[in-house]
Image (cartoon, rainbow, N blue to C red):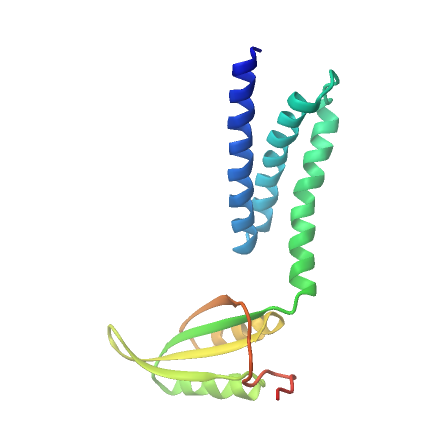
Amino acid sequence: MSFPLTLLVIFLARCTDVAMGVFRILLVVKGWKILAACLGFFEVMVFISVMNIIMGGGKSLTIPELLAYCGGFATGNIVGSFLENKLMDAYVIAEIIAEQNDRSEELITQLRAAGLGTTVIHGEGRSGPRLLIKVICSRKHTDKVKEISDNHGGFLYFSDVKAVSGGYFSGVKRK
């Protein structure tokens, strides 16, 4: 391969590798761990192949070596996501948009009875009054919020919270 063609291949491959890495990180953040791991497998395959061109020193990687390296990288994505989920005490905000009725009032009562700080905002939807029920909680409480919400209807979504200060959190004494 000619020198200018080699440079072009290196440039395009590295551009592809970095773009895949950015997209992989976004997939991990969104919780799509398996898809992120699969993308990571190919991301590192591109990376290691280019590094082999640049630094190869005449020795080519065998297919099993390349697959082992790529598989380790892909699996690392899953393990890292798992560890982050288990070890980081991150906060999330659960927002439930519900019709204003007795079921919603019961939902609010059950969320508060479960020890979850719950804020209610009154709003207006296309077909009438709505409640926007906000619960900021530890990620470990998301299953509890989902379970209570599923029994009462409404639209539920979770968003990550960067930091919290003050307020009421289940099992946490605040100053």
